[in-house]
Length: 245
Image (cartoon, rainbow, N blue to C red):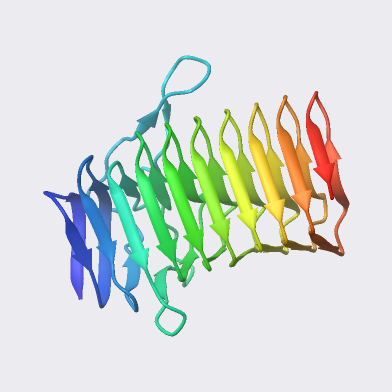
């Protein structure tokens, strides 16, 4: 088992059994590649942690990281390329960790990953960052995916389940969800504060409060989605727009 903590000196590759014993920072210009079949586990308390701040619309910085848990902070690029027969497993088992943060125009591509984050956010994007998810499964966190600060998220396939809210886009961010399943989450997808969300061919199940909500000048478009045992399928308010087709 290899152990990782701190700021990477350059490009790095994770494979086999990996223990993240403290915050790991992928700096601008560096790439972290996680190979198929890798199992990434996290220490219950970090032996090294850093404070990560992001710009807020209110004009003051807000801390985005979890000081009492291990964070994976990406300022460069993260590539996690699992396969259907050899997925990448990150977290789970009831051990809390801080999730994955993308800041300062970072980029991430995650394929066939199973991510269990017993904390507030599983994946967060800020500051014009971009994230692509393909056939990934997220769970345990309060929020599965959060896009803020003009970032862009594209999800194809996969599942988000057992969260408080499946996905949130706000602060002018864009989110495309294609054939995603959001299950056992009281709130499915939220679009807020000038965000643009498009949901196509997706399935919502057991979303007690609503499947999709839009408010604050945001726009949500739903094409060919299915709703089972949910509250309001589409809830628009506060000068928002929702199109259902």
